[in-house]
Length: 482
Ligand code: FAD
Ligand code: NAI
Image 1 (cartoon, rainbow, N blue to C red):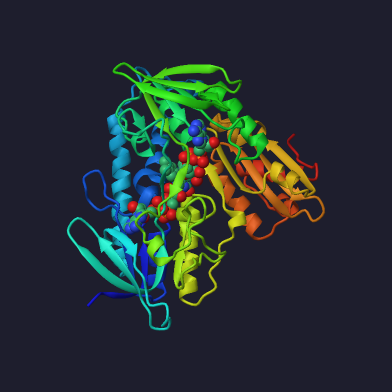
Image 2 (cartoon, rainbow, N blue to C red):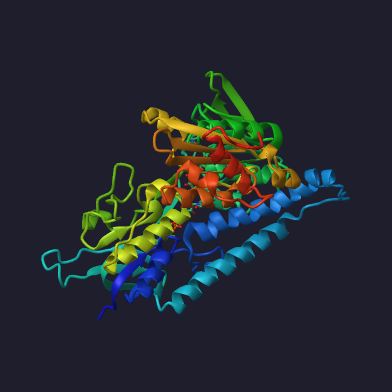
């Protein structure tokens, strides 16, 4: 007889494993099915985020930032470093230890919460639609050793995403790399092309630039970082070009990539349509990600996918099938780990009869470049195109004591508030540690704060948070230090 569960979660990324733990906390008998294997061929929980995404990329960004500081910034503090060198294999093994620690940690958390864990590909089979009250979904779990069928009353699909491919640039993870290959190099390529100037392109481009590569970013769109507020994107492009040393070409169209023993030649048309050729040693392809629905059983069960292949869901993450939910990268909305996890929690709570909720309008974005970029809510261009009247307050890190002490003075914080009600509509940041500062902005937006609320809150001195305080004061033109 098949094993029977209240909830089967397919996928153990930050959407799936968090949903499974929350289900178990709420007393639901839960199984989490995942097919990820690490390079040693062992099951490894945590999905993209822990294995080849958020965690390894941030580990390497931190290491490379330390090297950059020692090479270029320590001397202004009077610290001289003689014969500085970098050992990239050591850096990689540090990253791998962090990953192994976290992926093993997820396995322990599932065990501690009594979530059953199954390794293999989960495929949703048909269920008896006539008899809904007693009907259970059948899920086939296939791995190298066995094919098992389990059954569950509720299913949460959390199968995540994989890199979008470019026919012209087939990834081999030796010379043409996706995010997995880009996080595994054992030496810095002398010349590196990054196709796609989005979040991964900028983070990976910064990482390898700091470790010594000449990096050229080739972005198809004429604009730069179009997801961000225009003013932030403009400031970022200026700093990345002048200080970070990234070469950024926007509005390009790749026409061919040829490889020979010496190099890789990337041919493209520039923004004016002129043919260009770039010779490099490695290429990173980072042109977006696609939802993982292949082999999930969508065709046989009638699970509705949208025109781009995402599982179609309503505001409560309900799919077209009864008692089947989907969360994270495989559904609409930003492809971010914290968004996936919060959707997982909300769905678990709904299954348990509670009112779970995720506010997609208050999801923070962070790009871990140097300086970092972070935002929540609407950008100026979004407010303008929606015809919403707003006021803006802005304050630079240059005028902040803590930023001066850190020696990280580039960037600013901008607060956008409704012109009539003063309710905060968006907060945009570029500067040091804004990945941490954005939390205050998210809390403010979730509590429907006005710019005056932030302006009247006491912020510690000297701290980077004073930049947000002054930007909020700036909405009514009463910033003090500018
Ligand atoms: P995933 O993490 O993709 O997990 C899905 C899991 O399901 C995988 O283990 C997969 O193997 C498994 N699976 C798929 N199909 C099946 C099946 N049929 N049966 C069984 N298992 C299956 N986000 C951030 O918020 N912050 C960051 O700093 C950040 N950095 C990133 C850096 C990189 C290089 C990349 C690539 C991504 C980054 N992201 C970041 C995005 C983040 O990783 C994703 O948004 C997040 O992992 C999505 O979580 P998920 O649970 O929806 O899917
Ligand atoms: P992305 O959508 O951020 O950027 C892809 C870029 O590639 C776009 O600017 C697009 O215009 C460009 N592009 C597409 N086709 C192209 C082509 N043929 N030639 C040149 N450029 C082309 O996607 P990316 O960087 O792959 O990252 C995927 C997702 O992963 C992100 O959107 C984000 O959700 C998540 N992520 C989040 C991070 C974070 O939170 N710090 C870090 C890394 C990834």
